Length: 132
Image (cartoon, rainbow, N blue to C red; front, side, top):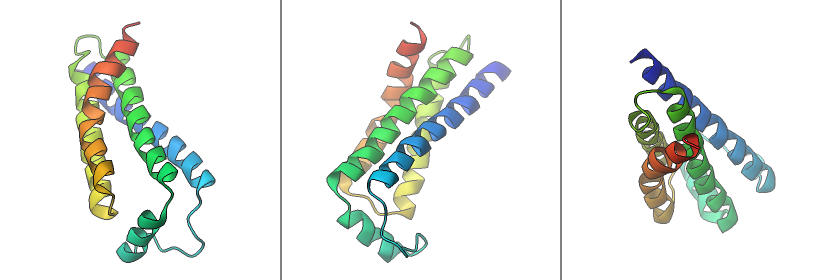
């Protein structure tokens, strides 16, 4: 049980690191305008509305690859719960992405991807890669 909890925690950390890394690359390629206030919801909504589609796709790609990486780490570390641990990581990713939706308005297609992709990617793809 302790190993599974550790697997889930480390899977979430791994997912977060992958998401942060890919989003950092996305910000380097599409930097926000100078002086933008991230705590201003109207400014963030305007920023998201004016970003190129490639920047938004980069965010979804970060969520997807983060989910796979998190599921992989959780499945590798957990000996007994090779489905449950990655599944928990996928669910955590959906919850964390949902918090992001509340904080920053996103287009509907991103919200659909953020809700539907993490669980199967973590639980199925990440787990399958870990089994290789």
